[in-house]
Each structure stands twice: as C-alpha cells, then as structure tokens.
Length: 251
Image (cartoon, rainbow, N blue to C red; front, side, top):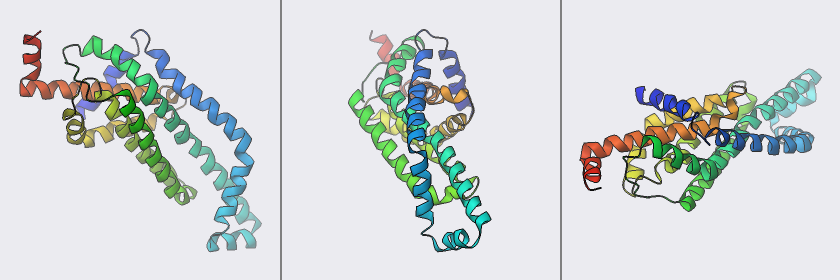
C-alpha cells in the first residue's frame, strides 16, 4: 500500500514538469467532446433500443404492460444507467489515447528526471503498446456488454464499471510503463509479481473518473502513477540482482 501512495505522490509531482500537464488534459477533453456529440445524436435511439431489449424479458414485460408507474420507473432506470455508462466509456476512450499517444511522450520526460539510472532495454514498442491497448479495450467492452443487465440494479453497474476499469488500467498502462526500460523477461515478470498492487493502483484511478474536474486528469494521471510504480519496482529489482550497479560501473 505504501508503494501505491508513493506512486500517486510522485505522479502529482510530475504534473509540475514542463510539457506534462497538457498531456493530462487533452485525451479526456477529446473523448468528452466525441461522446457528448454521439450522446446527443444517439440518445433517443439508445433509450428506445434498450427499452425494446429489456421488453423481451418476461418479468420486465409484465411490469411494463400492467403498470404505467412501473413502466415509468424502468424508463428512468434505463436513462440513469445509460448516463452513468457514459463515464466509463469516456474514460476508456481517453485511456486508449493516453496509452497509445500521451503516455509514451510523458514517459520519456519523467524517466529522464527521476529514473536516469535505469538502462533502457526496450522490451516493448509503440506498436506493441497500441496492440496491447486495443486488446485491453476490446476485453473491457465485452465485459461492459456482459454486465449490462446488472446496470438496472442501482449500484451494481457502478461496481462492475470500477472493477473493469481497474483491470483495464493495469493491463494498458502496465505495458507502457515498462516498454522503454524493461527487457522482454522483466516486463511480464514484474507485472505478474506486482499484479495485486497494480490492480489496487488501477482501482484508485478508476474512482477518480467519477469525481468532477478531477476526471479530466484521471486517465493520464493513472498512466503516470503506473510509470512511477513500475519503474521504481524495476529499479529495486535490478538493485537486488546487482544489475544497476554493474550498468553504472560500465558507463
């Protein structure tokens, strides 16, 4: 837990570094604009589509047919569920932009300042980052679709969204954080060894997506937190193996 809070603290400090703050804002702003436009254009068809879908469920259909109050209550729940659903959708779109574009840029800036002692072994690549991020988003979307029926139960959809977003964070940003400095053996091993902590780190970041104003920074801030956590873990791992000392002695 201490290492998680340390990663958050270092991520906050990184916000003051030149050129970093802009990359924290633009992915979410772009995602918000895109989904706001789509939401306005597609809102009525989406509501109608969901109502038609759940109308095929026998127990819901009976309530819709027998009670106007019941039908109105279901309609309200559907609209609330769709509105809440836009938050993780915006977050995942911003996270994709961060993982593919913004985080690699921020990684170079942050690593030069705080992790200059780490040798770059380039176990990953920008292409690998893009493939990893797209695969993570695809699994996230499947998870959202499979949990859609539970979104009609107040609170359950929110919990499902947070858990799925936490998984997305550790899958997408875990690769990017190590792709320049870790080698092909270190990258999967460190992510596996720190899997529980990375999920905890991602859960904290997922919660930020539901805080107004703060959610503008959440995806990129999360990426920075993963950079700090995993590069510090990589540093300790190499020190434990005597690699950093050897690298520095050979320079």
